[in-house]
Amino acid sequence: YHLLRHLAFLDLCLISATVPKSILNSVTFTDSISFLGCAVQLFLVVLMTASEIGILTAMSYDRYVAILHPLHYEAVMSKGASVLLMAVSWLNGGALGILYTTGTFSLKFCGSNQIHQFFCDVPALLKLTCSEQHVTIRVSVAIGVCYAFSCLVCILVSYVHIFSTVLKIPTRQKRSKAFSTSLPHLIVVSMFLLTGAVAYLKPASDKPSLPHLLVSIFYSVAPPTLNPLIYSLRN
Image (cartoon, rainbow, N blue to C red; front, top):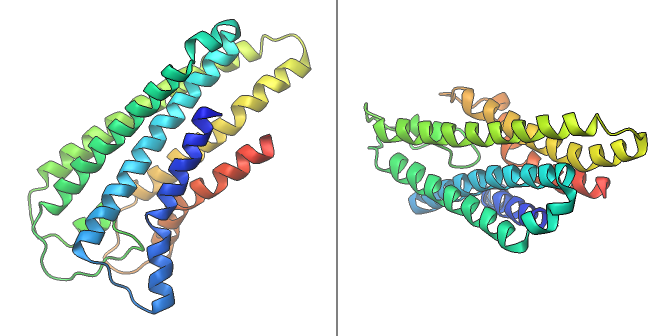
């Protein structure tokens, strides 16, 4: 539950970075955000998203140790090991947040200042820049893709070993118990990565688009909202 509590805290922070400002704009009938506020929002969204991917990877390793090496679980996944995994996740998220934010706001902005999005996101902000060279952003995206892909590989390798071991368990009751501890995490990981991939692979629209807005809402709001439900129902 140490990692699970941390995941819940990250979900709370991720939603708090975007939803309150959107609600405030709706209530006050405004649609503006300051330059500094936009930069802070972008940094927080990238920080929380990257950190959550790291935490989900750590949780897959936790499931791997619990099912394949149950007698060594307390020694391998000690409190110190959990803290180390969480610290690495936060550091990676912070580094990517700084990289994306400085790279985006080092570009020259001109023309329209309307963002076709309910929060400040890199694809939407790139539509407002008149800089022809996006070297920093391309490097940032490449690093982000490598980070997400490496996490995905670790998760897949963990679950290949987990399922191959679970299927060898002779009794159905023990097999169901092992699946019940792994499937909620696998659902959360799949939902988070799938919605994130759809949101970032879909090109930003020059005009307001309801499907594009819904994809962004589903990516940034749905996973943090559904995570507590998935784990609570499982418990």
